[in-house]
Image (cartoon, rainbow, N blue to C red):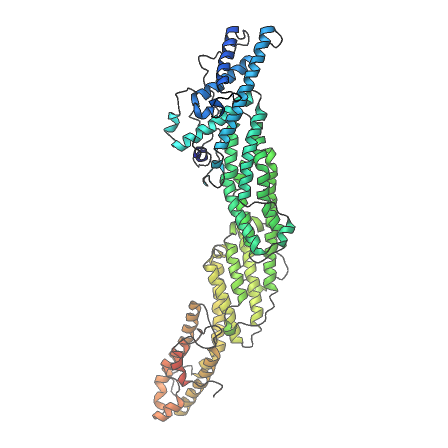
Length: 636
């Protein structure tokens, strides 16, 4: 029988389960009448027929049958063999054990039954062994699903006639699945016969021996091993990280193929006995399943907690929780309750560990002791790291709902009221996640605010906060954080960015704005015009040299600040310039009092905020030509 048959049937999404069907008795078989019993002729015929057939397939005799398989050699004869065993077993119940010829016939029937059972044990072993590779997790389909064993192939009874074949089944399923169905049907036929004849122990021993070795081998190949917390604590994070990745893959394979396939096979082969199919499945899978579901608990207990550990724990939590319905279905027996308990324990330990890591993350932000401001008021590493961390957290928002929905927020180190722009009310599990993440961002903003205060220049501190808050908003807008915090949250915080940007403009360029008259076209004397041009030259140069080192990484915010300064400065200066240039006098006077033409002012402004961080110079190639009009403060 081709080996891929059973694999296709056991591990296919379309694989139905099976119902046990009883073949109609052959014309040679006589139904038992409890009142009249068997006639002596019927008993002799049944024993004689069994003796002839069993002798042909006696494994103790040196014959061709000793090295071949009955079920492979002739399906029809195999079915007749099972019928003959069942008929023989029936008459044994009505043969007297203490009366002459009746006692002899009973002894003869018992000897024949033992011969038949030895043959069936061998057949059972051969069929299981022959299909072993195709129930291995590395070779079965990963799209398997377990279905009810009472609906599977319910329209197809096992036709036991020698020439019946499986044509009706073949009309609806593929040839490979037909072969698989027949292999499983053969196993079930033998198991039903052996169990009914009192040889369940022998049948179960064979099944458990072969199938447990397959499960154990599968668990070993998937890299599942029992580890203690002490072993986890000694591992380097890179090593443990690889083991977690292997476990996640093992979880997929185990649930889709290994345990699912074994449950399908057990339910079908031993469908005649609930107690046997439960004991077999438990004996075969419990040890491996407990080891599989126990790994996350050991990892969660580990003391090592690098920043990325929480995301591995989230992945393991998701792997168990998303498969929980299957876990309960596959390991539904009372004897496999230890498996379900272990999976629950792992979920509990993972939840506790992740809560602890979230608290550690908050403490890391609060305890950051660096007092230096990033040169140019750019992005602080704490901002970049924290938002990347929160972005990854948002990708697990569904899992976080389970973990933190009932986790109270600590009252310690509450953010200042002035930063609570848009409080999130906690009324549902989802909003609990939103509130927790919102709080973490508030903690970050408070820390950034405290860092901004260490800046000697107030304008730069405002630009620093505007830059970092803009990065926070952009990260929220481009990630799943947007759906957790909402558009109102983004709008409120964007308004705060605009406020800090306006403060920066006022503080950095306030003297330049003040050097020009409120009404640039108002009449003034020559002396007043010259003095106004002189003040503008000095204030603009001073502001330029001070702000040229500043950076605004976000292009949208950068353009916004430049456009705002341009509207307040370039347009006003152009009107003033056009109106009062004639009062300056000759070319020599123009050169002395007017250092900037309106287009020069716009060009200098274009150089601002694009400095490459750490370079100390503008990244604009045009800045060199513009600066010929300017004197560095050190040379003034």
